[in-house]
Structure formats: C-alpha cells, structure tokens
Image (cartoon, rainbow, N blue to C red; front, top):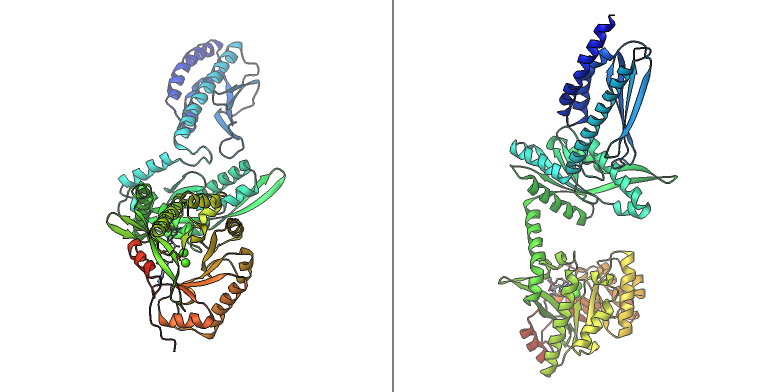
Length: 568
Ligand code: C2E
Ligand code: CA
Ligand code: CA
C-alpha cells in the first residue's frame, strides 16, 4: 500500500471526527448512541487500521436491583489478528465507569494513529457520559427510584395516552397492596425488606404482557394496568409470590400475598378515576376477610363517597355540636324500674339524622372516633348535671368507647379527668367496650378494665358472644357488667341448646360477680325466655328505642315502665 496515500487518508478521515461528533450528539439513549457510533466510526477505523473498539460501562449506582450492572458494547470490529491495544477508563459525573478499549491491526501503530485513537476514546467517553446523564434524568423523571418501575408520573402519562387513543376500555386498572409486608419488615432489617420489595416489583413486571404497565404507588402499594383478557391469569400469578432473599448469611423465604381492587373500565374513564375506584375496591378487600380481590361497583363508589363526606364533615360536626346523645333505658324485668341508660350518638347533619351505623365504623378508621367518644362523655356529664339540678333520680349511664381508645395508654386518666372536670360522681357512669378480636387487644382490654376498677368506674363488656373472649377468658377480664349480644335472643324460636347456652353465660357471669343484661329485647317471647334463664335486666325496643334528651327526661321522672307481658 502506498504510504503517502494512507497518510493523506488518515488526515481526511480524521477531519471527519468532528462530523462523527455531530452525528452522535443527536443520540439521547444508549442504544441509538451505539448504533450511531457503529455506523460512523467505520471509515475512520478502517483508515487507522483499528481492529476493534469496545466500550464497557459499569453502573455503579446501586439503585434498582441493589447490585452493580455491567454493559458491554462492541462499537467496531473487523476480521484479522489484533496487535497493540490500549485502554482508557473514565468515570462519568453520575458515577459510572466507562472503559474504552481500542486494538489495532498494525503491529506497531504510529504515534499519529495512537494519538487519533486516544481522541476516539475521549469522544466515546464524552458521548456515553452525556447519554448517561440524559438517561439518568429521564429515569429520575419517570422511574420509581426504589424499584426501577415507572413512577406515578409515567404511569399516568401512559394511562392518558390510552384514554386519548380510546383504548382504555380494553383494560382493567388494579390497586394492589401486599398483605403481609409488615411481617417482612418485622422479620428482616429494613434494607433487606426494601430488597424484597424490589424483587416483588420485578416479579409483578414479569407477569405483565405487552402494552401493560405498572407503578409503585408508595409503600407496598402498586397500581397496574392489565388487558381484560389477561386479568384472570394475572390474578392467579400474584395470588402468592415467593421471594427468596439473603439476610447476611441467611436465606430467608417469603410467600407474599396481596389485596387487590379491580376497576374494569367499561366506558372511557380517566386513568385517575379508574385508579381511585380500584383503590376503593382494594380498601374494601382489606377489610373483608377471605376476599382478597374485590371488583369495583357503583355501590362501592357510593360508599366511598359517603365515607369521604363523613370524614370531611367530622370536624365541623364537632364544632357545630351536630353530634347528639340519645338515651336508651335499661330496665329490670321484675320491677320495670329504669336501672340504667345507654348513651347512643346521633349526627344531625344537614337536616337529616344519621345513625351510628352510617358513620361510627368510618370514624373508627381514624383518631376521630376517640375525639367523638370523649365528646359524647362530656355531653353525658353535662346531661347528668342538668338532671341532678332538676332533682331527678339518675340511674347509671353507659357511654360507648371504641376499642381504638385502648391503644391510648392514658385513656383511663382522660376519662377520669373529664368526670372530675364536670364534678360527676363516678357511680353515675359506666363505660361500654366491645369484646376484642385478638390476643394483643385482649391484653389492652384487661389492663383497661383493671385500671378503671382501681379508679372506681364501672366497665361493661358490650356485644358479648360476638368476639374473641371465650367464657373462661371472662374471668381474667374482671368487668362489672356483661351485655349479652342480641344475636342470642334474636331467634325465631328457642331450642334447648339456645336456652342452655344463655343460661350458662348468665350463671357464669353471676358466679364472677358480674351484672348481666341482654340487649335488643323486642318481644314478649324474648322476655319470657330471659326470665327463664335468669337474666332480669334488659334493654331494647320492647321498652323504648333510643330517645332524645327531652323524652328521656320524662321517662326518668317516672322512673319505671308499666308494661304488660304474658309469661304463659
Ligand atoms: P351497641 O353499643 O350495641 O348499641 C346498641 C344498638 O342496638 C343501638 O344502635 C340501639 O339503637 C340498637 N338497639 C337497641 N335496642 C334494640 C332492639 O330492640 N332491636 C334492635 N334491632 N336494635 C336495638 P345504634 O344506636 O344504631 O348504635 C349502633 C352502634 O353504634 C352501637 O352498638 C355502638 O357500637 C355504636 N355507637 C353508638 N354510639 C356510640 C358512641 O358514642 N361511641 C362509639 N364508639 N360507638 C357508638
Ligand atoms: Ca353499647
Ligand atoms: Ca351492644
């Protein structure tokens, strides 16, 4: 080959470097950058007798899978032996290391060849570094930095695109919450828990088909858009996801289950609304045992809407004194004397009267219920003082206390402080607490009752027979009153076993020195039954429904009922 010609060629070809620079400057992601480099370096490499240019990038950032990743690109390669080579490593501003390796076909490359080779290295490094910054920026904007999944922004962008393309109705939108993630965090350190979450996210992604997408919606919540035809398979796949993880030297295994709300998009619906609906359904799934998947319906939507209104209106309701105590008398069946009353809340909201069934459960999901209960206690104290000043004989009045209050260590002090503030004799007040549903709560309840006893304030176990406390646990509770739930008497007829059951409860309660009362007594037949099994105290529509303060004042003035019952 003619040396002169090669030299000249090198010069002209290398002058192309600037042009190459321009061509690759148009690239914003790694793939197109590499393609452009392959395309544009060819001529130069041929002239420089370069056999290969290789580029290796080490992603040192440990964001996604908690392990460094490695990318290897061959930018240029030709047939033939390889001779001298050199290698350059740089670190990009975002922390990755970029290694460019050039090997020549010339046994001993000239100074000039080497020099130009070096400038190719620089050029590659600069371009990779620029593209990495662009992708990092893109990632930061569109990816969840913990799991590497699309973030909410990207998720909604994609959803809006489906909406614009009229194809959103081909999809279901899912809200998914891992049901036992709390257990993971209790079992392994927080960082390991995060790795579990990452693995879980990647498994979710692996179940998804083309044109489906997902995002992490904070914590262990995910929103997923799945084609209707793939829904069944997807739900089957996520039922229980096995995750193996290393915690130090130990291998830990979890089977993660989930709650899912599904919104089947029927007509064109915005992605935001679909996610809201799916989330409402998921919340319901969380609160419904044995039904981890709930499909959104208009009824659920209406409920959610109502719940939102309740939560939003609560504070104003307290300020405007919209919560009113009604009172339902408790009666001794033999004497028909009013032996007590239960305060039951009503909400006078926008001209309507709401029953507790319409709002207490909703408020129980937040601290509001504690505020409401204390508000009711104060109202009862005021009413007691008013009746006292009217010279009316006051029976013991019970106030319902949501179990949520039992998590408050100071609850007993707070109750006593309210009674003291209103100068109410403790003997006039009783606190009703429902049975517990699990062991931890049982301990709280037992502690609560013990402390109340020390204070001299009576406590009753409400809705007995519907919860966790078995008969033999009754003893360790040591409450003053047992309120037998109305389900025990709300029967079309009473069999011998029914009778035996209620009789045993009554006898056991008496043996533990507890007063017994049955609630929800409506009929003559129930009264006859209760007298037979030895329960003398009742509360129920047979005597009165919960009454306003004004009407109950009249009842208290009389102090007793005068009803006829047929005991034959
Ligand atoms: P609960 O404590 O078991 O109260 C008894 C419920 O049974 C009351 O319903 C009462 O009106 C109803 N009832 C009474 N006699 C009869 C009857 O003969 N037949 C029938 N079918 N029902 C009868 P209400 O007033 O709707 O209260 C429902 C629940 O709301 C209460 O159940 C209690 O758990 C809760 N609640 C009421 N007020 C409060 C409160 O101030 N704080 C808290 N935390 N919960 C409250
Ligand atoms: Ca009650
Ligand atoms: Ca009850």
